[in-house]
Image (cartoon, rainbow, N blue to C red):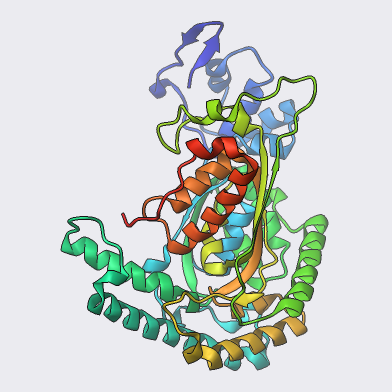
Length: 449
């Protein structure tokens, strides 16, 4: 930790001279720091290491800060959740927009009916539970059958997969495996268990837990209780503000109602054709200078991680697809900036060209009718009847620099073929409205890594 005084950098006391602090004590100390000119060492000297709880109470009483303003000072608190459904992992990333996190890759989790939570844990109506388990078991069977068939085809017809030059046998084996999995995965149930880990401040955890606790899904509320119980050990005062709240519950109720109505109107197991929508807003207030030329904002980058200029950082972009399969939504939903929205419905069902739909009509029809019945009953558990091939509208609003990064990443080296198709179409629409960026934005070819 360093204090800046004018142009001089003043080093802090040595680490050995500072007391060890909990996340909540750190937050209270920094809150006091903002209301004092004593310096951090003087404030820490007043902390009673033997009784940190009293120090926290004393500081917070003096500072009189709201819980949110100091909750953000707790540093990164890491929480890992094992064995949650893919739906809950998706929802966590949607809610926790300020978090850093990871989810277990589809390539490494168990594709087995035993890797599904119990129906009661998810709120599946008891009379529909046997039917639900049957559909999901058949979906896993379809996944394994198509995986084996595609893997064998990739050996018999090497031209089906793109390989880097002079690829070693281990690389060839990995790309073959990924080729089969990336196409068979559309049969994987959204209810499949996965693992997810997130790191964020106590402030953001309290918001996340409050929102989870306000959802109508039993799994979300159970996760909220488990997370709260764990984080209260680190940040007990701040986690008091993490219970369900009326405004959150009402918004969740309205969003579910929209999803149910839209879902029943558009429910289909047929493929939904590709449509993309992009809106670019370059407007700026008259009392500020217009942004630099777009070329100047982009041309100095060595790669997608380079700094972009004000022209793209100030440009608003909203982009949406009518047909985002849940398989792709799970990853594209993790791009954190801005706001993302999907009703999570099945307006169509995507299968890649390599998988003949005709062999799976009975499964798709039975899955469709199960989803229809759950939606007809108004059950939020309908999300657990969906497979990763379910296509849903998806909208993301952000700024052009973030959109360009995402487009270059998701069409670049090693990108999934369907990511590249979706982002390539969105990038084409963006460049149609911002043609001066064309020379400086690199659309990749999704070549294998």
